[in-house]
Length: 63
Image (cartoon, rainbow, N blue to C red):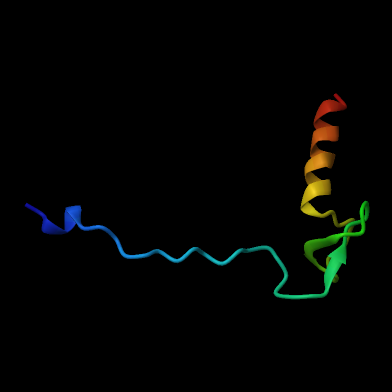
């Protein structure tokens, strides 16, 4: 019988977030001017998470 099968694993550290800037300065959201998760060097229209979610809802319902 394998004795290691029933052992509980040690604490697992969460993975660091990916796709976000390492630190300020963050780009402004083009709709509400709140800081986004993107660095200022990001090209194109940057949206904060809230505006991204709202924009996705508007686009999905505009059929």
